Every structure is written in C-alpha cells, then in structure tokens.
Length: 167
Image 1 (cartoon, one colour):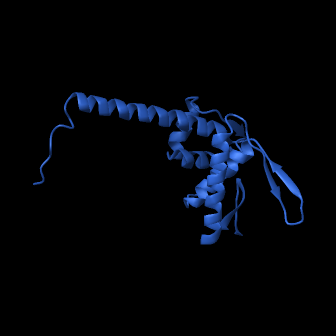
Image 2 (cartoon, rainbow, N blue to C red; image 1 turned 120 degrees about the vertical axis):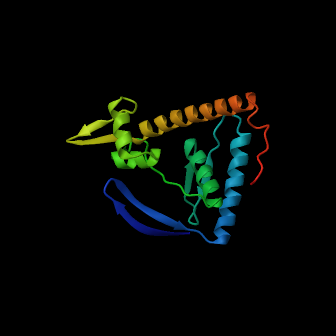
Image 3 (cartoon, one colour; image 1 turned 60 degrees about the vertical axis):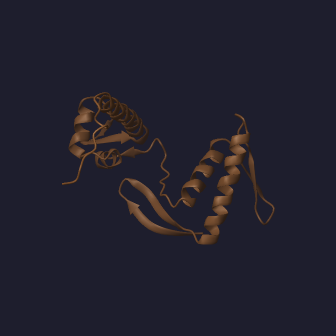
C-alpha cells in the first residue's frame, strides 16, 4: 500500500490517497471477513487484536478501534471512499452545506432558525461536524418516513394498479 500525499485545504488537515493493488485488496478483504467474524462472535465483548511487527514489538488494538478497522477494510474492499475526521472538527458553512447537499444560503436559514447549533468566530459561523451529521440523520429519517407515507397513500388509492402504455 502506498500513501500518496494530495495537499491541504484551509479548514481541513492534510489528506492522502491510499493506493492498493489487487493482492493487497484481497488481503484487506480477508482481514475484513475475519474481523466480522470476531465482532459477531464476541457477544457484546470487544475483542482485543494483537499486531506483531517483524521485530517482535506488539501493539494491542481494542474496542472501537477494532470496529473502525473492520469498517475501513470493508469500505476499501468495496472500492468505496472514506474520510476520517474527528467529530469535534469544525466546518465552514460551505463545507457543512456540501455535506448536507444543500445551498449555503439554505444552511444559513437553518442556522438562523436554530435547527443546527453553531458558533461565531469573528464574522464567520462554525459548525461542529457531529451537529451537522446529527441534523442529517434526523432529516434523512424524516424524508424516509415521508416517502413511505406517500407509497402507502399511492397504494391505498390504487396508484400502482394502472399499467401505462407507451404512445
């Protein structure tokens, strides 16, 4: 695996790209499956993983770190992207709007309405990542419930019973 530095942004720490070949991808997949098995069979107790370096040094990994490694290896083997960011990280309004997939102006309205907490640094608003993600989870849950309600209404009125013909 090769770490390729990519640069920095004003409000984010440096980030890098992890380049993985097919053989390494297969090894990550095996690790992911083994960790799945460990976490499934642990029955509430978190397993402790011991990494032994070629020189014999031992590093123990336990608790949420084991779950995080399983999650990361699983994402990597599915060629999905990931970003690791401390939940205490603060975001600009533009970054928060990007995460929520809304315009910056709409996000400002949400902030003014008290829907998401923020703090001012001079003239700039800063939002905690965990607050943005909490709002997103609630919003997404509400959206799913609304869509399920629309489906039930459509089914009740026979909306799915009619076959449309192409003209």
